Image 1 (cartoon, helix red, strand yellow):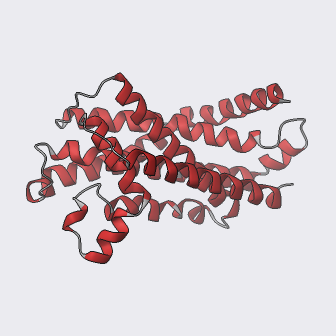
Image 2: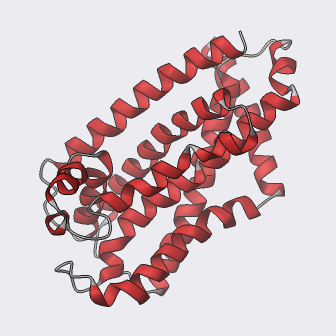
Amino acid sequence: MTSHFIGDTAVLTGRSLRHISRSPDTIITTAVMPIAFMLLFVYVFGGAIETGTDSYVNYLLPGILLITIASGIAYTAYRLFLDLQGGIFERFQSMPIARSSVLWGHVLTSLAANVISLVVVVLVALLMGFRSGAGVVAWLAIAGILMLFTLALTWIAVIAGLSAKTVDGASAFSYPLIFLPFISSAFVPTETMPGPVRWFAENQPVTAIVNTIRDLLAQQSIGSDIWVALAWCVAILVGAYVSAMVAYRRKIL
């Protein structure tokens, strides 16, 4: 049964990846907005923002990476919605394949596409002066956190793709997720914010994730932030996965 599920998921993931390879503009579009934000904040606002660091691009990059992920998962909901509307799911139901492999194909495609987008953003950041002395272990930890965050948000995208009534509705859910880093420590220290805004910023998931990645890149002690970040990611992942499977059963099965 497990080998059956893995084989079916691999085939359906390959199908989704082929769709992306035929339209690379999807990845380009995903990376354009975060890069535009990075250029705007570094070269326009950066000189007026005091973060206590020598390089604002170093301070900014973790938040930009999360925006990249939030932007990229919108396409997962979009592709899932098109499959539903095109009757692909009904065709799959008539085949002897593992039912959940259909969703996992989209999820793994999202992970692969977001990895490419993240690499593009990091390369642009390097051109803008980003530097880090982080070692291999730190970079692996950063990659793990980003992949876990991507996985959690992708399952939210699956819910949106299954529940949306229109194409625009399928991707519109990502707008609040893209906006969330702006009310966090991603662009400015939370100490500069007024009371209620600061409280929200310090107690939402993006701040813990951003602080953890920033400390890893700067080779600083990460303290308890990493556990808070992992707890948020796992909680979102479990909740979104369960909700997505319930929505899938109601929609298809």
